[in-house]
Amino acid sequence: MTNKPKQKTRVAIFGGSGYGGSELLRILLFHPNVEIVLITANEHAGKPIGEVHKNLFGISEHIFERLPENLSALTDIDVAFFALPHGHALSLIPQLPAQVKAIDLSGDFRIDDKAIFTEFYKIEHTASALQSKFVYGLTEVNRNEISNAQYIANPGCFATATLLALAPLVKNGGLTGKIIVDAKTGSSGSGAKAAANTHHPQRTTSFYAYKPFVHQHLPEIKQCLTTVGALTSEFVFMTHSLPVARGIFVSCYLELTEPISAKAIQKIYRDFYKDSFFIRLVQGSPDINWVKTTNYCDISVHTSGRDVVIFAAIDNLVKGAAGQAVQNMNLMFGLEETTALNLVGTNP
Image (cartoon, rainbow, N blue to C red; front, side, top):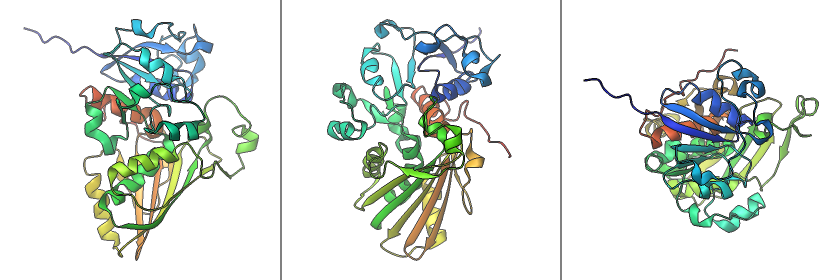
């Protein structure tokens, strides 16, 4: 008697032409448990994916398709990834057949409070009835909930790095005063379409801050931290533009109620992340060069009396987007969490 081969998870990717879609394809095309059955990109419909994403040339014969008019007819897929601009998933995910799981890489379902969502995203939330069914997909914090979820709101890239840096200390308690987060990102975080602030002559020698106090990732960070522990500290979050293509580096400054030794605080982080393969606790400073193109988050912690500084680095397109989305999909379908994500960086 022969064992019947296990059926692969059938995947659809909505929005395959952007950077997030490109990274989803780079990972999922080599996922041993996945069959990609649909990739949409309206402006590139009919083109092979390798014609749009030159790094995938010759890898696959998949063709971009137009967004189907009737998503309720997609009964042959198991999970849909949405790598579309903010606002699109609000109308599309409610159309999916009831049995189809969804992972949204936009900000449409990250924030529980409808008024706060509108304040930060400047659009109305039109799928409030579905919001309560979404689990916030910060894998290392919400692993159990993700495993049983049908819908995942994949975290933002800044939020991922910041939350992974802060979660162990917030969980442990003992914070006082302000938490100040100084976050920096590469140009790919602005998306694949050219804009004045991502144009190479403008960006290559430039460094500047943007969206002070109003960045859209701020409310999801605060929302998630309140589920991790008692967060009573004031929170200041500032974002900056780096003259690099990809990577996020966050520096978090905070104060404890009591002095803590380096050994004690490092134990807090080791214990919190003992089952988290993609968290690497490093000495000195993390470096975006060593996490680029990978699903790793490198973290280091430093103390001086009651003052603590935490550094974290991720690839904004992998751990901050597509990689974390695949990590969540693996959990949702009972697969090994690291499947297809053993991606290593380059040197240099």
